[in-house]
Image (cartoon, rainbow, N blue to C red):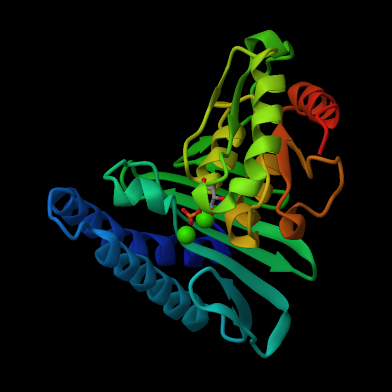
Length: 265
Ligand code: IPD
Ligand code: CA
Ligand code: CA
């Protein structure tokens, strides 16, 4: 288990923000049946979580920069460190009362991802990883799955939402190529958890396009530290900024890349 000062700081911030999300999630379930729905309430919960993470992390590591989903970039006096923060990944799930959402915190040091934490307050699953220190779920060391055969693989993916309808034809073509080769596919609705699930061997691989740095930053460290492979869908290294992500164990990651490469753009 990682007990570094850095991981203590990240864990404490996530637990504090997570307590608020857990309370608010209980309230969201009551709001489902109201005419106005829980929309505004959820945006407030999201912003509150981000505020707590920002305050706690700035207090503990003064000067680090931030890239946050809700407030954008905050330049610190130390440009070599950047926190990538999604205060609530899986907003649609949260809004609909589905307990599949997470806080995601990734730390970039001099252009490299060095630490990641993904915490689902509804299940108390705390995924953590630090470069060179392994990946953990609560106190358990994580290792990616050992499956090598695509026909036995369970693959996660992301479906572009209604506002990204121009991405639907390509996604449908990719999905169609993948479902003809694998056991089945899943769509969780929280990219950070998708990556954590690859690290935890719950998925054999996962792919998605159109992600932001805060969706993927923490997961990159988790997958690598669990012995997995992660790249862009084109096989490149700029997963953080391109938004194109493919992760898995060595064998299934390779076969999924080959399969997706045959799908016309
Ligand atoms: C979204 C989720 C979803 C992914 C979207 C993300 P949000 O993040 O991670 O799984 O498909 O691309 O934007 O909006 O719930 O933080
Ligand atoms: Ca997100
Ligand atoms: Ca979010």
